[in-house]
Length: 437
Ligand SMILES: Cc1ncc(COP(=O)(O)O)c(C=O)c1O
Image (tube, rainbow, N blue to C red; front, side, top):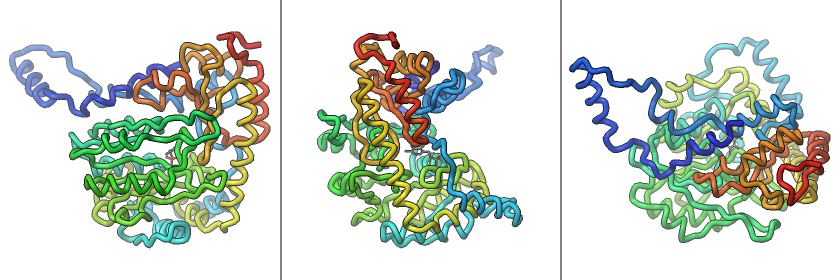
C-alpha cells in the first residue's frame, strides 16, 4: 500500500511554495550547459515532487485488488435518480454533444442561481458570477490559481480534505493549518481554538478554505464560528473559499449556512459546490464556483485553459437535477442519517472510538483500542485480512503523526454493504494487534 508515501508527501506545509534560490537554479543550469557541463536535468517539476497520488483513491485500488468492501472513497454504491440519468441520455440523443459555453451551459447556470436563491436567499448573476467546472475539484484548484500568488498564505482547518494540500502547492500558496480537535466525548462536536485561528491570519493571508459540512470530521460549522471567520477575513482583507459540496447532507437538525450570506462576505466569498454528492453522480464531473464578477473573471480564465469546459450533456442533465423538488433533498438527508445510524453502533461495537458526524457521509474514528503503531498498518490489515477498505487518518493531516491513531469510514453505501462490512469488522480483536479472529 502506498498510503504512507501519500501522506508523507504533502507533509511539508511549512515549506515555502517556491524555494529560495529556485530562480537562480535556472541560471546556473544555463551557465553549466554553456560551459559544456552536464548538469542533471530534472524532468519532473519540483512542485509535483512535493505531493503523491491521493491516498483516498489509492485505497479504492487496494479495495479492488483485495476484493474488499470499499468504505474508503466517498462515492455511492447505489444508483443516481432515474430522472437525471434519463435527462443525460436525452441530452445526448438531442445532440448536446459539442463544447458548452466555457464557463457553463446557460440552463445550468440559471438553475444554480435559482437554487442559491431558494436555499440561501442569495441573489447571484448567472452571467457574471458562476463558472461551471469539471467537478468541485477543478472549481477549487481554478479558484486558488485565480487568486493566489507566490508568498500568499491560505488558512486551512485540519484534518482537511486531502486535495487542499496539493491545491495549495499548485497555486504556489503556503498553507497555514488550524487544528480541529475531536470532542472528548465521542457524541460532541469537533472544535477549534479561537486563538489558533486568529494567529493563523496575518498580512499575507489571501484566503481561508472552509469546508462545511466537513470531510472528514462531519463537523457543521455554526453561525457563530462562521461569524468569527468572517470577522477575520474582513480584518485581514482576505477571501473565504467555501467547499459546500455536502450542503444537503445534514443530521440532528443542523443547518447549513453559506458564508456568502453573512454580512460583509458576499463580495469576498467563492462558494464551491457540485453535483457529485447531492445527486450521487461522482463520475459526471460537474461542479461550480460562484464569486463576485471580478473574481469570476479570473476563475473563468484559469478554468478555460485548464479544461475548456465540463461535459455538455451532463450540464444539461444538471439543470434537470437542480430542478428536483424539495422532497428529494429531505429524503437524501434522511437516507444518509439512517446509514450513519447503522454504521456508528457497528463501529463502536467493534472497538472503534467513532465520532458522530453532523453532516457529510464519513465517520472519523479513533483506533487506539487495537494497539497498532499507526493508521497505515491498521488500514493495511483491514483491507488485506478483513476485506474492508478505509482511509488512514494521516492523509488528512499535515503531520502524519497527528492522524496516526485515526481512520475514516465512508457510509455512502447500501445497507447490505454496510452490514457486510460490519460483520467483517466484528472479527477485529481490540487489544490484539494484527490478530483477527
Ligand atoms: C470536501 C470535498 N470536496 C470536493 C470533493 C470532490 O468533489 P467533486 O466530485 O465535485 O470534484 C470531495 C469528494 O470527496 C470532498 O469530500
